[in-house]
Amino acid sequence: MQNIEQFVKRVMTYNVTVALLTGVGCCIGALVVLVKKINSHREMKEKIERARNRRDESLQQAEEVVLQYKQSHPTTDAAFIMSLSLSELTKQLKEGSLSPEDVLYSYIEKTLAVNKKLNCCTEILLESLDQLKTVGSNKEGLLYGVPVSIKENVAVKNHDCSCGVVINLDQPAEKDSVLVQVLKKQGAIPFVKTNLPQALWSFACSNPIYGKTVNPHNPQKTSGGSSGGEGALIGGGGSLLGIGSDLGGSIRIPASFCGICGFKPTSGRLSLQGLHSISRGQNLVLSSPGPMARDVDSLALCMQALLCDHMFSLDPTVPPLPFNMEIYRSAKPLRIGYLENNGYMQPFPSMARGIREIKALLEQAGHTVRLHHTQESEQTLLKGEPLDPIIKEQFFIYFLPKWLKKILSFLLKPVDYIHETIAHWRSYNIDVLLCPVPGPAYNASYCGRIPTLASCTVLYNLLNFPVGVVPVSTVTAEDEEELNHQQMLSKPFKAAMSGGEGLPVAVQCVALPWQDELCLRFMKELEQLVKQKKK
Ligand SMILES: *[C@@H]1O[C@H](CO)[C@@H](O)[C@H](O)[C@H]1NC(C)=O
Image 1 (tube, protein in one colour):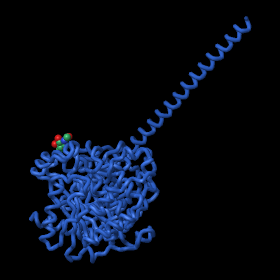
Image 2 (cartoon, rainbow, N blue to C red):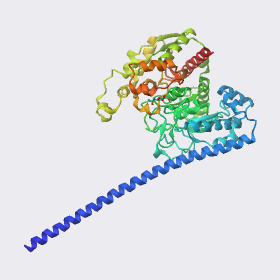
Image 3 (cartoon, helix red, strand yellow):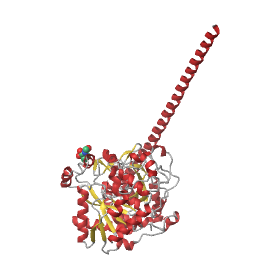
Image 4 (cartoon, protein in one colour):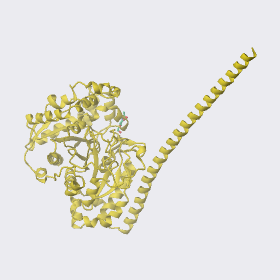
């Protein structure tokens, strides 16, 4: 009897001890997890703080040196310098009637002012001031003395390429990307890095490190993404040439939203070395760096400058195709196809009007313009195709919007589609294609709710066609009125587009792969026709 009692007691004590120990163990475990979490949270916070400090210090130092420069050079006519187009500016720099110092300090001053309003810069590159001392040796360069802005994910030595993601901070690039090296060789002076959305994959330009960039034409609207810092800075007048990157529309959408020109070359034409994207090795949807600027001539000059022997030797994977000036300057009438929509997105009144007006102008100018039907190729590319079971099995697919699923199904046999599309262009006998681009700029908070936004830009990444954006008009009161009466458009669409009067309206110009010069020539043609019409 006593033995049993003792036994029970022992067992109880044992159980209590185990329970206690387990409890304590759990507590310690939870504590460790908590401490780790707090630590990593603190680490993150510190990383963000350091990055912001770097930005703020560079802004403050830039402000000081600009002030000093202005005091010691009171005759510098910054307003005059700002008013020059890139081709005028390069001419004056080459002739020596303007100095690279005057130009750079004037642009930094303007950039600081624009950044205060739009929050578009992630850092001023103060070493650009040192480059002034050596830039004289690149006097023959096509971009001698031209200040250039650079999107944050394009490597500049000693600066982060975070892509707006905190864990990527504090890993400064060991060397300049090939494009930055070539720009410098051509005499250009990279002077500022610009903001982008977190992980690049968004059409609103905001991240937890550097915050939100707003539209230069209306601060309630987004500047677009992912090259939204470039769009805002150039649109706001703080830069006249920038390097962005396009993965699904990320040069074209901010160009459209901010009222500037942007160009996505055929992927592969420009070096990708030193270009950071969040999904390394992801090249199904071909990404491409490209220029953004106030006018088409600037885009062409930038392409001409980049497509040089220096780039071909730095990156032998790039085909050594120099810029074909003859094609860019050609005046031969074009055979142009046009799309009113891409079958996925209801065109907004201003988008449709933009296309109609341009079509009329092109016809008056002697080009052949015809409606391009998309049913057989481009549209089947996004419609029709049943989803492969392998892809279907991946559970995440169910959460993706319909158009993205269709794109993924397309990815299973892209080559077929590219050839089909090219054959289709041939049967229509067209050189280039005119089509809508998303716009006008959306209210920032609505971007995430409009996934079809990218459907009419991502197509040309998939096909790997060169494509650019040119502003052609602005939203009128009638467009706004029509928008309110549109039955077809969903509520979030309408809300996102509301209050857009006066915002830029743009179009997309497309050419076949490797016909980058032809695409730019078509863009230039549109730009001139619009300019003439305004007169
Ligand atoms: C969107 O922004 C515009 C322009 O500033 C504003 O007038 C409108 O009220 C906003 N719409 C919504 C739904 O927030």
